Amino acid sequence: MNKQKSFASTIIVLIIIFLIGGIFVLQYWWTPRGEVLEEVIESEEVIEDETDGWKVYRNEGYGFEIKYPENWKVARNIMSFEPDLVFCPPDLIDSDPGLGCQLKIDATKPQYENGMIYLFVNTIRPEHSKNPEYHHLGFGGEKDYDLFSDGVNEVIVNQMISTFRFIEKEGMEVTFDIQDIHLNSFDLENRTFQARNRADKTTINVIVNDSAELYSKGTWMVDGEWYREDFSIKEFFSILKNEGGGPQMHFIIKNGVFSDENTIIADEIFFRVQ
Image 1 (spheres, helix red, strand yellow):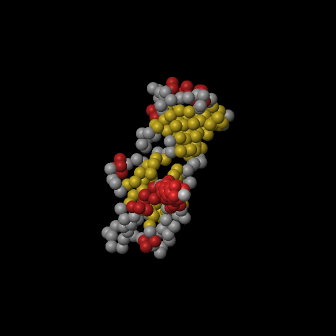
Image 2 (cartoon, one colour):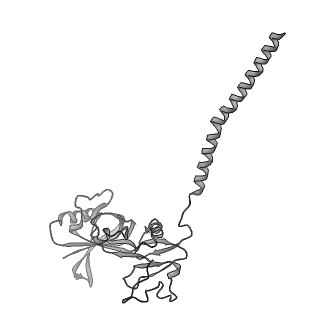
């Protein structure tokens, strides 16, 4: 009888030990994983677009757009040339809508108050790359796009940079000299070639549409009309190759569209020889 009681006690003790051990195992394997999963979900919920709700400035003529804070104002930079812009925070907005952003009252010559952000569109200026106050946005056509800040609103500047992009620009005209053409880049099958961008010395990819017009106009008239000669894409490539060391030749891409900052799609190409 005592042996039976002892055996039963042993069984009970083993069951208790097993249950306690099981609880520790469950806590070890399940609790940390649940906490990690919860942390991942929380981190995903935090991610958001800091520029959501901002206004969008879009310039169809120059083919770009950029976002700026909703309570800021954008105005034409009256001390520069089109399409240069000035962005000003709410405390520097001028009551004169024609001015847009405040000028310094005590300045010997017109200049904007500190805290503005400027967008400049210029031919390439090497000095900009050495100045930390200039933030390069990209090259479009033959222009260099930069944001300039005096450091007061640097956080806003960095957020604006992330929203800048080039857009398709209809009716664009781009002129190249024969020296700008990469003569070994002609691809007749894909109707593409490459040319040098004069602004930043980088390469532009030119795609000639299947229906593109390729032509030149002579210096004489036929039946009251200026003589016009049309070319096939094969003749076009042949002309450019053969004229590589010859007279000065210009060709103008008309009605072009920039699909990105380094690729232009040509619907019309006009030749002119000097």
